[in-house]
Picture (tube, rainbow, N blue to C red):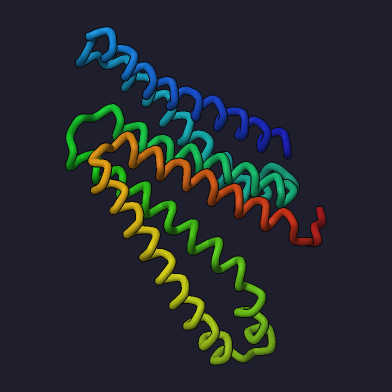
Length: 205
């Protein structure tokens, strides 16, 4: 049912708001001279729990028909929120910790997830050209095409990773680097949804 998708979207919005509140609360408390408090972390835990619920609901809606027919565009938008919430959960956790090595690990985790979505975007963009030969049983032709697309894909992903590393090294600030990564993730997922939203796809119940 679409109702579950709607609930999932609402929970995603609430979760993102809670995660943002956790980060704001941390800096607000620090500005008041209160350090070492666990309240921001408790807020983050609440957001992480909501993420778990949303991931389970989205997995059910996406891979099964337990809830009935769900329109592909509804699935697309719902999973967009899941992606943004997952990135926010990782990056906000880094804001709550002052350990540079720990923050770098979280930043790299977020970067890898974003880069995986770049793979998705490029693959979807070239999917017609790649799978055209496969539909005719020409597996070698399809593989040859995918080799070139993979080369482009690897180059783009490498450039993005180097760019994110440069931002980290140049600023020396986790907050700035995480903000840049979060903004890039938002732009990327919106582009994916807009691009796919313009493509016609027959649906049926």
